[in-house]
Length: 431
Image (cartoon, rainbow, N blue to C red; front, side, top):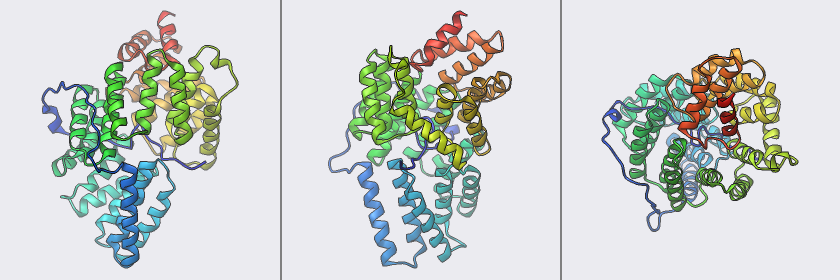
């Protein structure tokens, strides 16, 4: 099985916010379907073209450090768009070559090292490269993007916000608005996040950027239980870039919530055959477990794939996708989930990591220890239904009086947040 790029919340690693977005005006436009302009290649094709061009350049000018840095950037972009980590090794080699040719003023290679580190979940190293890049060239935007992505995953939210503010000041484009939207949502401001994402759609320069922002708008609507809006945004993303994986998953989520679990499961099975990311596999497993009779059947291929990925993560000690730990906590060995998330916590201190560690500890019978991480997950004000359910279940296990409030809050925020856990949330509110 090929190694896949892991992602957080259905998106590439993003972070940050901007003070200027505090003053965004109201925006009530409905989602619209937008197709790519005539003659515009799909994102994958565009990435392949850029990669071919960069390879030809290094062959023609093998002693040009900028050419090798460009090749590294194209390889990293190829890994991002295909969700396949294999090109990262080629990017590493290209960056080493670039720095060997120019190790003193090579801004592009420093940025590339930061991008590579972030892609590998080496966020402390990514932060170091981001700081070096912004110090080398305070008026160039790329270093701030690297820095913001690292800071958000390290849990340094004010620093991430500062980096994205500077990024927007220098290059107010789709990538900057997407990072701002992530921070706004994480800090409990979904309406402002939606405005930022619409600006990301409007300023997108490629079909891939547009599909990403449209899908994130769908995710945002989904997180509020707005099925119709979510479905429209996912459809827009798929019209922009057919088979865009996160939009396919979002559409399956909506189908299940609308009472069509069979169609949803079929969509997940087709998706995970092509793109076996832990998030998609886990959603398939939990949908299947929630269906009458299906939950009692022999474990399917999604369960087998996740179990294999858990074993691999435990063996290699590398980055851990939190969805793997959530799978182990609920459908495997909770002790494995704790081991995985303690391992990831040493590298990543985001609220997503805190929530997954909290749930792993709770499922392993350590609810008292879990509570501090559940509170850490809530520290930014993100009204995340799954986080609230996890905290409510932990507090219920400890007999705390606020448990029902958290559980009701989860269901009020998004009654469809999980076909598997929403039922348990309802049960706990009655206990």
